Image (cartoon, rainbow, N blue to C red; front, side, top):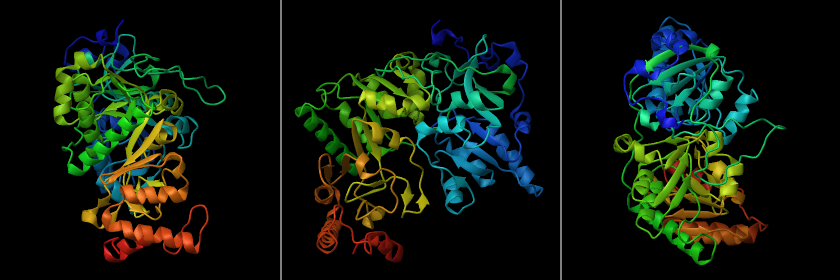
Length: 515
């Protein structure tokens, strides 16, 4: 039976639950959160805001707030797929409801709590989350709160607009609360591919995925009905991911990337028409690259990434992209409307998988992914900092960029050459925090140009990075640093240890990295 026939095209909540045992467990969100206690480890669904529980987490935040008003200490450890909706992150952070957060966050209130020491945060590769939870690194998972779009007569669960780590949460949690969201179009059923073949060493087997569109799993989640303690019905739209049009800087970066693709084609390193499967992070630069691809000569492209943004829907609709695989949708309000209005079409061109498959190093290496991710800064030798401002304050997290950078066929990091109106250079002598070493960085791109670091020794890399990627305001200072480091210290990777972080120190003291 095809997945999209598992439910009828209705929006009534009661018609989304086809199994009597689950129907008998329907309660309010306020009743459901009585099963969550202080100190619990709670795993919730959601990835890039899509599929985040709409009712239970606000009810939990309210319970924590009321409990704290009586003087009680109530907080939970929160595990997710990646970021969740900003509202969820904010409402739990603002009531000091999170003791530990893992593996990714993207909301100012949570970020402030982490950076002031009020919330412990573990920043890890997204492909590692499922294994580490199975291994018990975070203790046992007390409660999983997972949004689904329906429950079949056989008791299986229809995923909603993201998969993330939901399979793992349903498997490992002692108790499960389900949110059945009837807003999710029933026609989305069948867009999911949930793989149940992963295992811990020494029992692993190859992931038999050789093409972006390959199906290797089933369209539903499994869950032990005995673990399901509550079912909450909702009819609520996903939160939209913010989207702004690409600016001139983003468009310039995209132009350099597209020129590089043509260069690689001319050298026989990329297929002329279809390139290789694309992966890109979120934001202006990623959308600018996608727009550039739409105007270019390439057709029948594929995407193997974490999220699908508005730009990807546009490419699919116009035939530039033939198929896209991800673990979640990350759409604006307009993008959500476009998907819902044309779901029968997009279901034939999109597949959502668990993030342990969307980010699986073996699959990324086999498919030959072109990985394009953002960075905060890079140093002259190619080490990349994508997470920490001034080396100490977390921004969001490494997410899946490391999964793709280390294992991709091409590893590219993109950023404007300056920030804060020019007072910060994105190219520095040494990054104060390293997420991606020089060994995982092949190409750096800013609006100034592109530095192809493949086959270059550190000293040669330094000159290429400065000449091609650094802003003109900082080039002389960077060249001067390299020249003196080579003359005074020498070595394979010359550094003046007393000055290596001088750009950052100058910013802390004066508010600008400029000499």
